[in-house]
Amino acid sequence: MTLSGDAVYAPSENIVAREIEGEIIIVPLVAGIGDMEDELFTLNETGKAVWDKLDGRRSLYQVISELAAQYQAAEGEIDKDVLGLVAELVRRRMLVAVEPA
Amino acid sequence: MSLPSPTVQELLRAVLDRGIPCRFRALGFSMHPFIRDGDVVTVSPKPGGEIRLGDVVAFCHPGTGKLMVHRVLARQPGGYLLRGDNAPAADGLIPPEKVLGPVTRVERKGRKVRLGRGPERRLLAWLARRDLLRPLIFRAWQVLHPLTWRSPA
Image 1 (cartoon, rainbow over the protein chains, first blue to last red):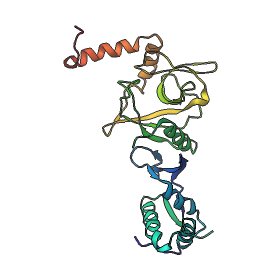
Image 2: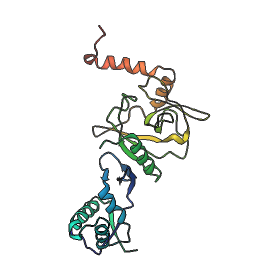
Image 3: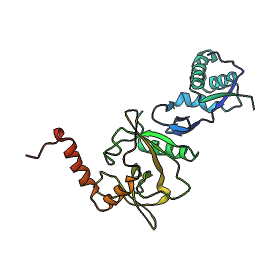
Image 4: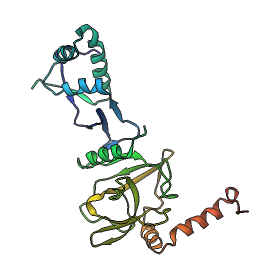
């Protein structure tokens, strides 16, 4: 999957996500049922930092730039991780591309 | 994935609050044999009408805070009398707001299990209220599984 840096993503309506003890736990809605048995997905602290910025307003470029500043890291160090996580969440239909707000 | 009970409860509430059923693995033996350890249950949002006598429901025990799945034996002022089919005693009166919703599906090894939630549920509730269900289950187990039963020495 190729992601565009200008693309904007937001959580899908077909999930329920909750922050629990510093992690994000995502329950996907499969065929109209919240599936906590087969499809649960957990984001650790780093994943949560990325998830919190995917709010339908920031492009992926902006997300990477902000995280680099937040963690005082080079953008080239974190962009692969960010894009990899976003690609996985899109593949699982937990994130969807949206028009910039 | 194994989740601690408070986490399961919070997620379950979050999904049910959206008006959507939620599916998760049940652990324990208090509803054996109708719901067994490891069965996957689906809990639906509370129906517009009352929870029915004999329904199996998910609830948060007010004393322990644990998420549990047990059967409705009676509706009384103040709440529902609940008890596990294989539990030695009732849970006591559970306030309606602690009841999250009825179990609408049970899966065991990929197959649907209906026993205990059909019309027979009212009979099971009647037997449980009179402390007759658990001995009956035990006796049935002795008869059906003689090879696994050994008389005490």
